[in-house]
Image (cartoon, rainbow, N blue to C red):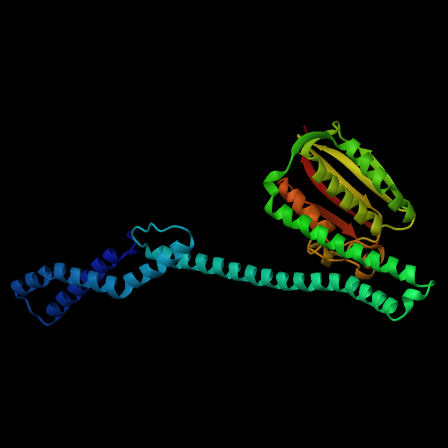
Length: 335
């Protein structure tokens, strides 16, 4: 079946229709002069040229400008013959892509505003605390032995909190700009976990949390940046301790997945609501804001985890049930 999908074919169709119509008019008018019929048929070529010119000038040239714009946005400048059948499809695909891009820009803009607001809020709290303590000391509290040292210690604690927030922001910034500088090496992941448990033992003891390791993998050696994976596991374990329950467990498990190892960090704590899971790895996002600030933390730990694993071309996954606990998991290649 012939497709009339370009200027030339459409011009041929229009010219044929016009000539045929004129001949029919002659026939019904009972004009049977052969010379008139021949002359009319000979007009086909000039009629074709005129039609082709007009189609290009007033229709196809304008479509071609739009088409070029679409191809330019697609990163392609080479255009051959325009196929009218594909114009609508191409235009729709381009419009959908632009709409998706606009939606993403709106989301990014909202995220940027929310991020700035969160940074302001996180820094404002310790700053106001420091200001209050210093003002009390200036107003005479400095000479009161019952409060002077206590308020200085509290101010110092607020300063430490600000420093931790800034340090974590710097970590994320470095991860976003220096992902190629990961130091990949073979290391024993079981030994690393024991080191982390030693570092987190006091914090877990304060919260009455038990730290456990379950190795169901046949190997213990993986390939990754050891220091960065240590930071990942430290943040995940710390997070599980914060949101654990009294007398609960934080368990790190290893599973075989062919040439990879699946690593899980689980707890049986308060769990996470389903509506919070999609935003869990955003900077400063907190599932339980009151509890988070009571036990400390910058609200950047899981965002750092996400960036580090993305630098390893891996993703962090989470499953959770409210009131029953959470499990964070990721994959590393075996050595």
